[in-house]
Every structure is written in C-alpha cells, then in structure tokens.
Image (cartoon, rainbow, N blue to C red; front, side, top):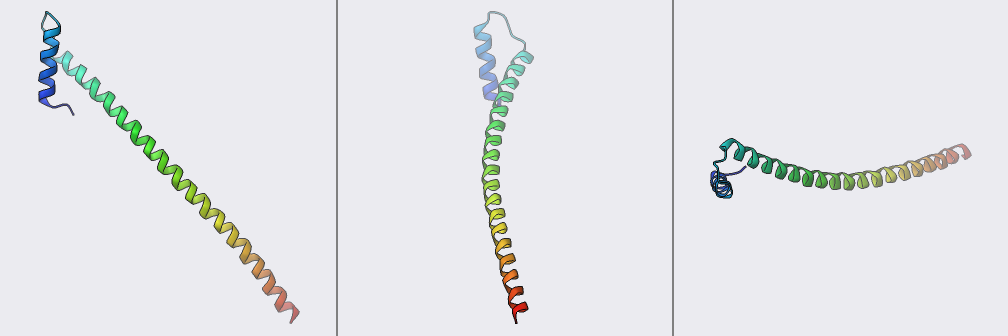
Length: 89
C-alpha cells in the first residue's frame, strides 16, 4: 500500500511538472495502477515459487510410487515362492 508521504510527494511532483493543477483523483488512479503492477509482480513471483514446490513434491511422489511398485513385485515373488514351498511339502 502506498503511504501518505509518497502520495504527497507524487502530488507535488505532478503539480511541478504541469503548469495547471492536476485532479487528485487522477493522481490516486496513477498510484493505484502502480500498486496494481506491483501486486501482479508479487503474485507472479509467488506463483513461480508454488510451481517449483509442486514440481519438487511431484518428483518425490513419483519416486515413492516407483518404490511401492518395486515392493509390490517383490511381495508377489515371495508369495509365489512361499506357495510353491507349501505345495512341495
């Protein structure tokens, strides 16, 4: 958010740049637009961080799912060996 000091400084600089008096509403709109651009920039940065975190979590999840598949196959092999041993006795 833009503080009163920045607003007053901007108001004075606009008055100095132009020979006629500028409407305060125009200045407020200019400051609001500047704040909106900053908010969009921050939102994009946050979105990039979120995407990076998502990619990291997806990698860990894929690794965990791969380990689960390996363990399932190992259990199936051991089960089959156990059943063969029971049948052989």
